[in-house]
Length: 85
Image (cartoon, rainbow, N blue to C red; front, side):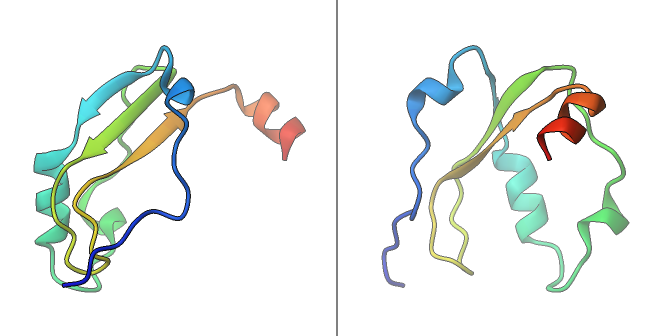
């Protein structure tokens, strides 16, 4: 498999104050679901009690060739999101 690199790299400063969660087990579970599975059919609402958190996955994803990836979540009030959007 060819090696790939991210197009966008997260600035480490963006993680300041964020809780970091290891999502390796969840990532493996999702990767093992049958192709075409809608994750919404398997998991309902998941909302950790943190205003900012980063979920880090260190598992190979054969579909896109990544070995590590993550997602930064931030929260805000619904009124703040509506004004911004």
